[in-house]
Amino acid sequence: MDALLLILLLAAFVWALLHFTRDLRRVGPRSGRAQGSGTRAERALEEELLRLTRGNRGAIERGVTAQRRRHPEASRAELLRHLRDGYLRDRSR
Image (cartoon, rainbow, N blue to C red):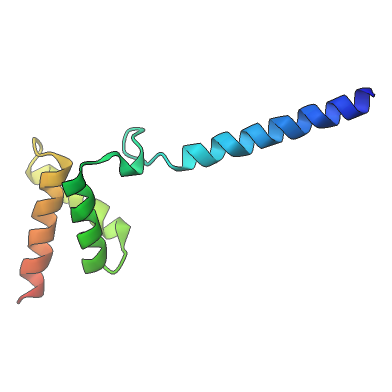
């Protein structure tokens, strides 16, 4: 009986660990916010930039970091807008 109880407790622990780990994966690297918690404009800009960069999220984040150095007071949506404008400007050349 003790072995059965131990197995059930272990299974419950593993289930809880997997359940909470799955929820933690939804949280992005941006200061603990959920990835989908941005504004609609921000999400739309990210989607457009993902299309422009062919899904290269690293390039987008590097671009946002570079834009943040130039515009430290800007919001993330404004930085994404600057980045998108730069990509479109470079593409049209």
